[in-house]
Image (cartoon, rainbow, N blue to C red):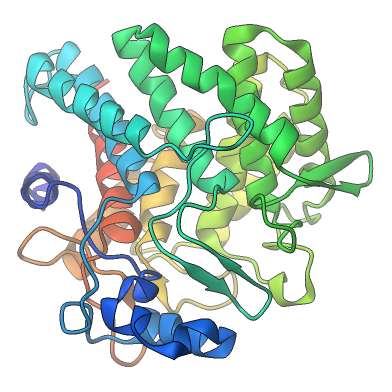
Length: 394
């Protein structure tokens, strides 16, 4: 299996599409739906989005859903190109010279900055589509979320470390005010959880709260504002108190959020480790070790096949193989897990990459979804494969 060739196919595909594409949740971008009175009914909005998300047949072109940039997707591509630039600096130029890759870094940085949402206390990002969250609430297009913002900030941090652009640093630092002033907090134990977004109603999602702490750890790294570190620490503490004895985490505290899955476990571990690296506070290492052991032991089969949930395999989601590579790299566990990661990546390329270069969304027991989603599938795999390439050539 030529992993570099598979990555080149993906890179060529994404560049040919100018990093624009469809998304599992973009159904309400349909010009047909927006022309219907159904758009005012929450159940219709929910059914429409879920219909697009679950269907193995892509109706987006027929129903006039445009391909667009997504801020999280752009951030993931930027993170990947920063990794490729680092590799090229070390003499590994399979995917471009330092000059060529720096050009991509600068262009994607500019694009991501242009997508920043205005009108809030600090720098923040949202998604390029309306999204109905069950019947609880409607996220309007460009509603800022801590998830989109955290990925964007980490990408801008990597860009800043390369370009030393003071304007980028100013944006990074301002994101602390978004977390501190615009997100609500739910007390838990000795700490609290940050809300998912500026909209009340989805306030106890563990990985989202940890992403708020992750943002503050980045702003602390550059500002040395101790308030940022102290508040981030409280969010980390609450999340660690919520870790199960076996090292697992449920997704969130609502009764409908009690599942345990692969890639959100990876997000949790990545965020806690990022906090430790940025602040020098390594007091949560016990929880990281316990969580990583659970992650590796419960979500991947011996042949590298990734599992979505701890207790069942399907659907096999492309996020699962992508995130383990990124998390292992962040935790400096790549070399220790290289055999497993190699099996996971080869399995994923063999079973989930199209001959055109893009990656499929999900494999199910029945009819699988082989639709190309730029943010959910391709951007995540691009970032993962860039991490893999750099780690393999260190």
